[in-house]
Length: 229
Image 1: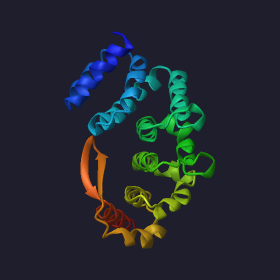
Image 2: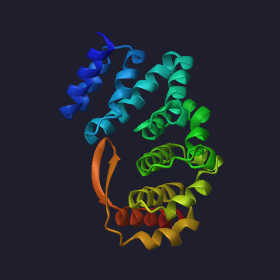
Image 3: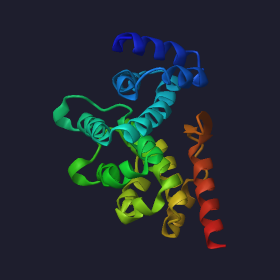
Image 4: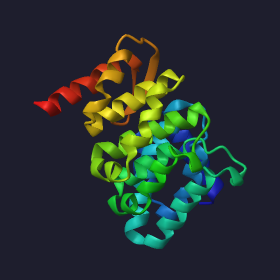
């Protein structure tokens, strides 16, 4: 099946919100043939298609990384290039996909985790709020499985800036990340967000969960309290 046909089939299955069917269908194709169709699906405006594509990209790259490490590295460099201003694109969905991929494949996290952190630094700073939300989500996804890697790369230090963001979703996601990482020093700042009822649609465990900035802040504080105990 040609790339365009694979893309059309994936979009159809994803549009039906049938992730299990997509996973079954994916098993009939080589992992390498799925990368480009999945990458194009990251640009979808339908949030279910976009987020399920993030999940599928993580699983596909896990398979590819087992079969061909160098091919997996080439794809990772392609993701990074798409976030580069010189690429001419914007990079929608790329930080989320990078976080998911590295959460699924530890050796890719070891090689490229520092690059995900670099998008908080001045030289690679992502200006658009939508990309910052994706970055905070991607960092949070990786933090759930490999917090030490992020701390080793000073992610918590660079993330402090995002607790001052004018974008409320960024505030909520950054607060959540500090809770996951167990950074007690962030608690006073996070405490000022608990009454913000701005909505956030959080993708977690393959589901989109309606929540708020305040709820994410309270969850973060609860995590921090548990770590003290």
